View 1: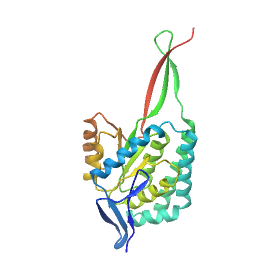
View 2 (view 1 turned 120 degrees about the vertical axis):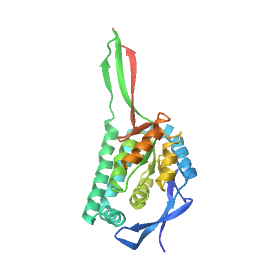
View 3 (view 1 turned 45 degrees about the horizontal axis):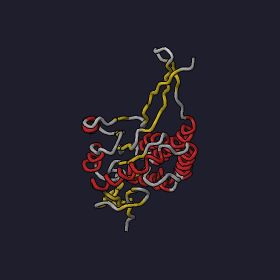
View 4 (view 1 turned 30 degrees about the horizontal axis):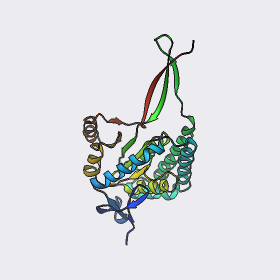
Length: 262
């Protein structure tokens, strides 16, 4: 009997509309587990949870964010051999490569735990006499992350850690071929102290979850890594609603003006 792994929505493990067996590519008789397959309604519930969590998380204390990300990184590194073995088993890398990728993911979370405490802006002069310019960086809102099969924990970490560090809320859709590593990461995040709804995991096929994500009006930015054809289609869909489409972390730059003292 295999273990069932549900989606994470608003801090709760939620069943999908169906399940899919996660099989090892080197041994199709090796069933890693059954993983929930969400539908568009499940994706919508995750987006609504992220929207509800954003007002509080976006202004939360930077120390609390830093502590949560550091805790995530610490657990990933402590479990690198276990998680590396899982990664290798579901994705096909050698075990040393899997452990190396997990190690990198843990380091990324540790790095952005530090970045939480180094948020900075700029003050520059304006060409207009007596006017100064202040530049600050602010979260964009709800960020949809779509990640590929070839780096099933490192790429989610590259996208997740900075998005969370800078006050965004996240909905993650991992590649349908490799849900196990993303689910393990989500389980660690669920115990990190990050409030419900700030991070959500929605597993399922790209043609269902990915399409619903890039067309959802409640998502403020999309970060996609995948094939050229799918990237172009996702970008076109996102651009129809003037949504940010990025391969970097989601931060918006705000410029404000003030009168300089005489």
